[in-house]
Image (tube, rainbow, N blue to C red; front, side, top):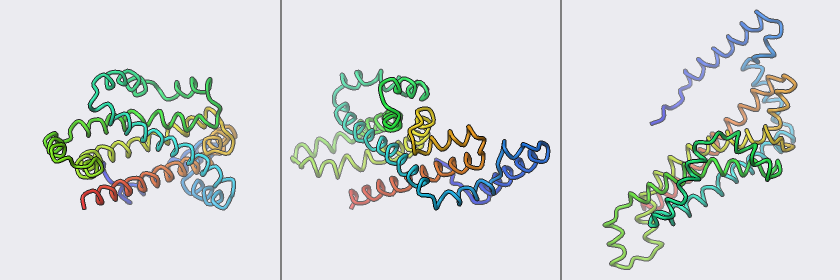
Length: 251
């Protein structure tokens, strides 16, 4: 069970960050370049917010990264539903799933650059990283579905739609919810990493790389905060949607 963020603990680490920035600046004239303070980073973020270029970068990255997440979820749900009753398909999919789980994301990014252009790269990498946890969790949820209920539904010839809503959804949604929460964090990390390496124009990853090249540490921290906020917002929206579907299925 994940521990909730508390305001006092967040404030504590912000103070540690501020203290480290002040100490580094006092010890070294260029210290502020190495570690921008949270105040400077927050002010820089506020300066970026009114810019149309900022929102274009956010929209471009969100479209590709979250699009990759949705495509991968759809594929994982389809393949898990097909594989649950077909051992040969589970065995066929096991090697690529294990490879994707174990291989560093940077390796996939570099390999994918051989086949894809920079703008398609974040979508592909995000989808690739999302697939294993969603597929494996949904497959486990389907395998744990009560067989007696399924046999009863078959005997009484209950329509597939009612079976999905009354039997499968209550069983699988908790597994999918857990996987989606984990996968969203993975897809944002992987997608932005793909942008930093591939450098598609007008994306969050490109802005991060530019900030690093020119030692614009307030920008670096500001864009990092943007990534964290976007990931948290998308996760909250997705989990709220899953909980709403679970409630509708239970009613």
